[in-house]
Image 1 (cartoon, rainbow, N blue to C red):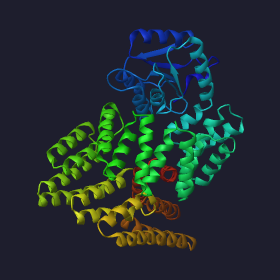
Image 2: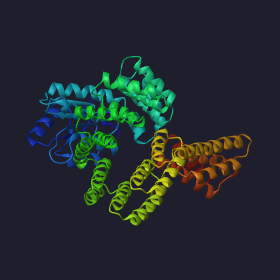
Image 3: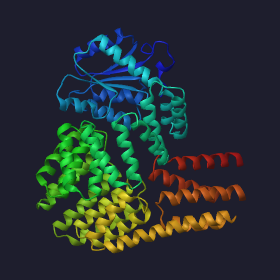
Length: 544
């Protein structure tokens, strides 16, 4: 997105503005205010549907959006979708408007972290002052936003460094982007250095959260938990910290504390579908069904107009219906889920719930057939969330007494994700439910040994000047672990060396490209994958 105000002497005069307001009279008043503030290009939308169409068709520098938009999407859901679809970027100004001054409403308006929110009534001087400050602050981010939209993370990082060196007026935002880009590029020590530098200046909540994420990556769980607990205590309105802490508490088996924390969070901001869903899952795990029903019901209602796929509330409610002896009602819920979300993941998880229902109805043969079908479908799927979906299906199959199918799925997930500690903890708990806790641990250790040995052998063979042998070793590891990102990219890197030394090979080029493509599907925006793909594209162009 190229922001028009970035090159205009009068930043408001050249900006493209979208005003989203459902009441016609208020829409006219606010448009008049915007024009008197100096803007000349103001489009208007009367509801979330119109705004969605306009945001998808045109780039805007400023979006001024009421929180309540009548029927359909509200302002929070519109902002959520705009970010998800990349209709807006770091350089776009988003102002949320609300007429209600209650703490719940203010939290709701700020839930998706707009750049600012305004309470009605709005005066011309207030609006102009806020807009000028925000536009000036965002101008520094225009180039960074373009690089990020193009997924050129290294260029975006370089631009951040240039902005900091040049004394940017948007230092806090640039530092935040810099740290997040380091995380995206798997440079965790540098991300940690940025966050710690920010925290030396003051107790900034986003820096505390970022540092906690680094500590979690480094497996410093006690430090991370203490920092997150400090964050929610000192910054009780910073809801992202609640989400991160809830995930950590879950992984540590502290379910009671997790439920209590999420209840505090939804009391502060009850209109977050993903947080209501997380509360439902946590409560159901502790058999606190009244809380689970309330949270899942709220989440289902909130997701009605959301662009974010939210399967857990439907699945949780369906599970409770099946366990209560109402498999027919469970299947109705699952059918509603697949009508709302026509995705591959939704279809897979719907089948898993059908296994549970068939088992409850006494159709053990039908349940077993469908479970075997699910194993094949889940093992072949390549997507960022494929491993989590497979683990979720395995857990459902355990509930449905399909131990053999569940074990196969858990083995597949473990072998291909031996370096994902969060996922391994989940699969280990599932193995323990099957009475295979020791076998699960041995499987993890074996997968790590196999991958580590393959990496070490390839490095040794490369150092000895035999990249072809290194390639064969990694090809074997890739066959054994076809969904392991690190193995796939190491294979691609060695393949590039073989091509450079021995010349073109259509078969090897295709195999290398497939490895990179699979890795990118599993881990979108991976910087190393992008670098290797660029190398391959340059190679094929130069060698043609």
